[in-house]
Structures are given as C-alpha cells and as structure tokens.
Image 1 (tube, rainbow, N blue to C red):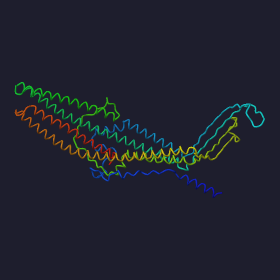
Image 2 (cartoon, helix red, strand yellow; image 1 turned 90 degrees about the horizontal axis):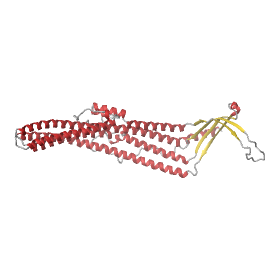
Image 3 (tube, rainbow, N blue to C red; image 1 turned 135 degrees about the vertical axis):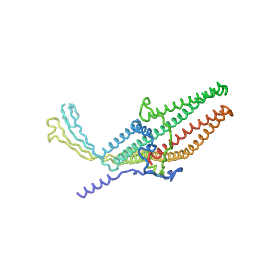
Image 4 (cartoon, helix red, strand yellow; image 1 turned 180 degrees about the vertical axis):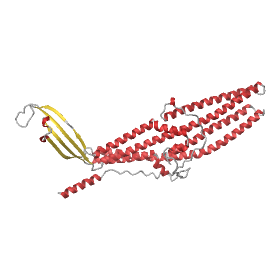
Length: 465
C-alpha cells in the first residue's frame, strides 16, 4: 500500500512537471541582420551616457526640457499606467497556483408543499423550517498539462512587453523633444541672420535715400531698397511665427500649458557629438520596440500551450466543510458539522472542435507576433542606416554650405564696392545680397538637420550605445 502511494505521488509530480505546447524560442533573424553598418564601423564607447543620453549634447536648456518632458508628459504617464495594468494581470494569474478558498454563509426559511409527490401513498404535510449554513469551500486544479503555468508565462511576458513599450514611449518622447529643440535653434539662427540683414538694409535704405535726394542715384534704387527692407521684415515675422508654433509643440511634449511656456532665443554654435554605432547585433538587444516584439512572441507561444491543455481532462480537488443546522443555537455544535471531499474530472468531448479552433487561432497569433518581431528588426536596421547616411552626408553638406556662404559674402562685398563706385546697378547688388542671405538661412537649417540626424541615430540605437 505504501509503495502504491509513493508511485501515485511520483506520477503526480511527473505530470505536474509536464506542460503541453511549444517552449518559447527567440525567432532567428540572422538572415536579415547585417554583419556591420554601411556607413560606420563598430566603435563602442563605454564612457558615453547610456541613460539620459541627451546630456551628450552638453546643452543646459535641452536638459531642462527633457527633465520636464520625462516628469510631465501625459503619454509617459499613460504608458506607466498600462505597465501597472499588465503587472496586476500577471499577479492575478499567479492566484491560480494556490487553492481557491471561499466561505458562503447562508440563512433561509422555507415552506414545503403539502402535496409533494412521494413514491409511497403517504401524505407529507406542509411544513416550515429554517436552514442555517456556514460552509468553507475549497477547490484546486491539478495543473497536469501546464495550462496554468502557460497562462502565467503568457501574462508575465505581456507585462515585460508592456514595460518595454513604456521605455519605447519614453525614448520616442525624449528624441522628439531634442529634435524639436534643435529645429527651434535653427529658427533662432535664422532670426539672427535676418536681424543682422535687417539692420544692414535699414542702413542701406537710409544711405540710398540720401543719395537719391542728392541726385546721385535714380528713384528706382530707393524703391528697391525699401522693398527689400519690407521683405526682410516679413521674413522675420514669418520665422517668428514658425518659432512660436514650435514652442507650443515643445510645451505639449513637456506636459506644460503653451500659454505659460517660453524658451529664450538660442542658436547652434558647435558640431553635434560623434555617436558610435556599435554592431548590429547589439542594437537588437537595446531597442525597446524589439524587446517588446520579442516578449509578445513569447506570450503568444505560451498561449498555444494553454489552449492545447484543454484537449486533456481537467482534474480538480474539491472539499467542503462547515456547519449546517435548523437553529442558530445549535449551529456551532459538534453534531451540526458537515464535510465532503473528492476529486472531479471533466473531459471535453463535444468541445474538441472548439479547442482545436482556439489552438489554431493561438498558432496564427504566434506567427503574427513572429512577423511583427522580424519587422521590428528590419525597421531598426533601416533606422540606423538612414541616420548614419544622413550624418555622413549632412557633415559634407554643412562644410560645403559654409564655403558657399563665405564665397557669397565675399561676392556681395565686391559687388557693393562696384556699386558704390558706379560700375554696376543696384539690382546686381540686391541679387548678390539675396543669394548671400538665402545661403545663410539654408546653412542654419542644414546645421540643425545634422543635429537632428544625430538624435535620430541615438533613438535608432535604443537610447544607448
């Protein structure tokens, strides 16, 4: 008898250790992961910032804005709330590991019929009686096939995916704040150029007015000078409008009211920092969107096992114990005690095809998750390559643009000297000034785009390197 008991216990332990359905295997993406980046060799830098990555730009105003965004952005708060929901769901799934215990106290008064059908010809008179019960119900499912374990495994993976989604929201937010901030700096650089041009044209218009009154230049030169002056004022107003709209965008990102939010004028002075790209395989470990996609694959894989477990009998141990009496005075007496205990086995017979359909649905969801994971990997590779390409060519563009501005300013000075000497018309001087102004404004935008490309590279690398 003792040997049979041990064998039964070992059998139960063996069955409890089984879990039907596939174990999670990280999808193979070696066929879509490059060995190296096209535009940059691997150059890891352990000393570079890995958390608050924006500090690498060494800009106090950017640091202030990022701190406001991290603390006050409502999308981040919503993402945190979603993580807490997933955490609560994962914790709730753990309850299935322990027996279900409930107490269902009840009290009732009943009247029986005086004409109750009986198998013997004896009339049972009507009667009134009370029932008082205080039972304690216990139920426990033996997880022979791993349904509970697979469900818990899925809930845990969903929680981890939710946390990765939160990190992705945070990375997207901080990257967007930095990109919009550098775009704002570009407008400030444009305003600096326009204000300088405005001062110069105001002086030029005054000088030409005096020369016109003296009869040295024709009236058309005076009209053209004032036209260019007013056109520059219009450009200043337009850039200020765009800057104001961008400040409102930054206010929203920082979780602030646009009416009470302001940023002082700033301009880009230095080049952006160099960001080492590392190797492609490392990026797959750092990107939160890839981590989220991989955890979703794990969750869907576990759900296949949870559904397949429904093919097999569900074994439950049930027990009930407590007190039952027709009088409250005797409810807790020894003779009022009642109890029952026994196993229950349920086998889905007609539900086989329903279970089969659910398993097929779970497998399809798993395949969908794998496709999503592979797409996330391809997107990561594309993002890094795009950012590296932009940084590579923006650097060349900035250098060429600086040379073009220098040459245009030199040409403008030469044309101005010739105009003052009467060798060329004022129209040629205006054309040279317009060319110089256009190139300077374009240079400010290109420089800002180079900073933005660096921000996008940091985002593409998962905010770490």
